[in-house]
Amino acid sequence: MKKILLDDMILTKELPTSAGSKMLDGYMSPFNAAVVERLTEAGYEIAGKAPVGEFAIDLSGETNFEGKTVSSEDCATVMLDVNGSPRRIAAQNGLVYIKPTYGIVSRFGTVAVACSGECVGVMAKSASECKEVLSVLVGNDERDGTMHADGVCKSALGIKKVKKVALLDMGVKSAELDLARSELEANGIEVASVDAGVIESANAAWNILMCAELCNNVSRFDGIKYGYRAKNYKNLDELYTNSRTEAFGELVKTAILYGSDVLSSNNYMSKYDKAMRVRRVIVEAFTEIFKEYDAVMLPACSKTSYTASDDVFVENKYTAPASVTGLPAVVAGGVQLVGKAFSDGALLDVSAILTKEGK
Amino acid sequence: MEKETLRLLCKVNQLALTEEQKDSFLKFMDAREADIKALDAIDTENVERMVHVMPIMTVVREDVEKKLFTRDELQKGAPETMDGYWQVPRVVE
Image 1 (cartoon, helix red, strand yellow):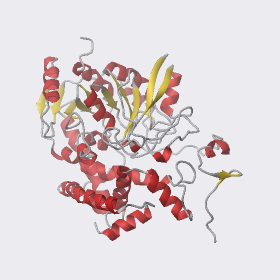
Image 2 (cartoon, chains in turn yellow, green):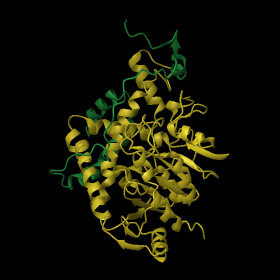
Image 3 (cartoon, chains in turn orange, blue):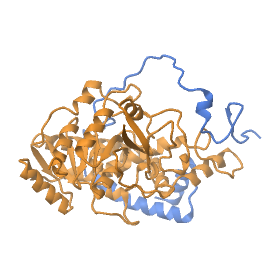
Image 4 (cartoon, chains in turn brown, orange):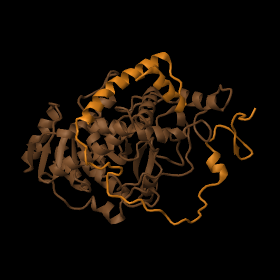
């Protein structure tokens, strides 16, 4: 039986799910996520839970409430990509991660954070292993109302080819990008530098949308029905406030307040509504690039490791383009490839060149 | 952002920040001005807002009753329950 890990954003009946937050410390879900059902039906053994940063919105797991850090494991890990953390981890640790096309893998039973962009993906040591696990996960699930029809989901793994790649360096000069370019070119794939244009501003829109959605999603954590409850309170109002204040970490509190601000009547049109319109402009910018190219190559992160002064709301500049558009993204060889919707299989195939699989 | 606005945001979101956290959040908001400027520089006149990234029509399921969980299963993670009810502090004095 093949072993597989799940990140701590995926609900499991037999194992606790904390979402990296004191708010859900020890929480036992009454049901399994759809991806857990699919994996066990396909014969996978759930080997355990991989830690995540609080609600998976940080750089690479540093805000986990117990200080647990993500480590490279021997088996593949199914991970929810909310704000690019799995892609940054893969890039900095020589792993492969696919964030699939939005709506081809069920999010039923994942801890909801930024529902309009988050996707369940797979991290593994090779692109072929990612593809093997992803083939188990894709398919319609009527419990997730944002999914495509079954045939459409499965078409993402169909035979397509990446022949031309647009390189958007986003101002990052990295050996990984240079190496990836020469590897692709050596394998007959044309690579040309393209100006990122409005795609550079994807994180400005994503930060607004993600925080607005997070603000709404975590409003359910009130210390009443499940999760953490403060010990000291005099009345219901104090119970809510003390429970949320004691359980949420600083990054999540920041995201809640920012999300609440952009949704307020004063800012709704100038910030939230504007971000939704910019989202369409960015989708159209990708559509324009994809008229000539099959995929876009860009950095997944700006550095090989982070310090306390690094800001996820700035660093997600590289992962936000795929998050805000729902396009598939694969990180391999330290770089990121973003493809047309439903080109997930083709992206993994071309990523195998970057990880030198079969050589 | 004015401190009063932050106080209201904290109130509606049921959060209490220390003075240090308030200063830190106000600095965060200053940094977000760069995001707002970047968005304002993009022409969105005659651009429709995009709620769903993919052309997905939310399909409403048939309204069929399904017994998915027992009360005990749903209350297993509750901080405090009594006789099958969620327990909260007294709300009527």
